[in-house]
Image (cartoon, rainbow, N blue to C red; front, top):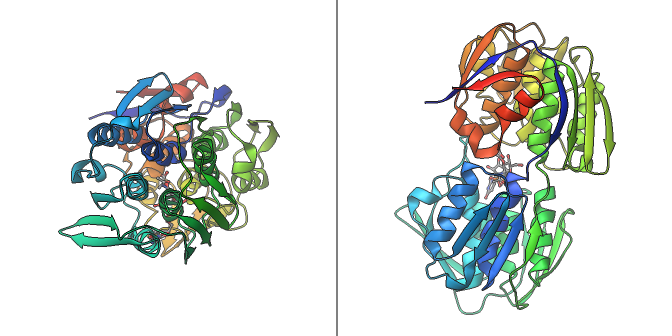
Length: 416
Ligand code: EPU
């Protein structure tokens, strides 16, 4: 069992290149099965979620090679369209194989996806979209059996929630349908734009990603492609929150500032000095963050739910009071009880958490989801004395080098 030992109270300073985006690379790897031949994906972070996705691709019969941050997937040898339960359960994004395999093979059989426990995470919108495109979806013994009933045809799909995963699945399925598919109420996250860029590189005709309406002119012949994944805005947000908590200054490269507008504006309001450039963000924080207007999580371009926990950690060791409202997931305050062990003053009532900043002290704490575990690291960097943060396995799902990156900025952090 691993844990981080962190001695807090040291300001952070230096430069970091941000890893490639976890939530981009996963659906893009699923999309490689759409065409025969070898696709090459650059800027892939080394994460356990990426390894699990490569495991699925290998099991489907694809040839996979990973060298540094480049992954090659040759889907010419694809020979199966069934994914075993164990692999499906390792991550949430495994569900995007449904749309991709349906497009390539006309069918897919897989279990419900796993992922961090953040409250109910249904996939009804994914299945509704696939059914409207002409797929028959049966649910038998916890497995989903999905087959195209004759030729799948483009349709207008209206998503009642701008779900990231449902938008991705609909895009992946629609490129294989004849005719035009319009996704109305689509998710607008940068990772959706990145998926569109990869699908276009494969020869798909698709437009509108980044807006609420995406149009796919399906049935075009697809070929393998080369693509560079965007920088990870959530890893960047976590490093900025770490500087907000511990103080200091950091220059991040490899991340697009416009992907983080909502996060940067809260940090600025809290007193951070932020400068952005082409693919870079620098932030200096001389004093503890001070309380700001309520932070309400919302679909992009609103404040991202994935940055809620790290930001809450930074405010819990700042000054003043800040209210958080978690609108995206029912149960995303798993870090609150652990922050309280470090002395944090956070009152939770349903979706609302009210944080009053104070000096934290080191403690033994346990993360129970990816961003919640990262939040505990952020708090430990500012706390007086030593903390032991366990739940490292969650962090390794989404952060390539959290401990060595923070150590390079001057943090006293060790993985033991
Ligand atoms: N929802 C439904 N029905 C559906 C799909 C979603 O009710 O069929 C609801 C969910 O229960 C949730 C909301 O819609 O309340 C938003 O869910 P969404 O589908 O957008 O999320 P996701 O695709 O499961 C992705 C990221 C999450 C991120 C969310 C929101 C990946 C692999 N995961 O999840 O990232 O929090 O979008 O931005 O892309 C993380 O990286 O730590 C993480 C959890």
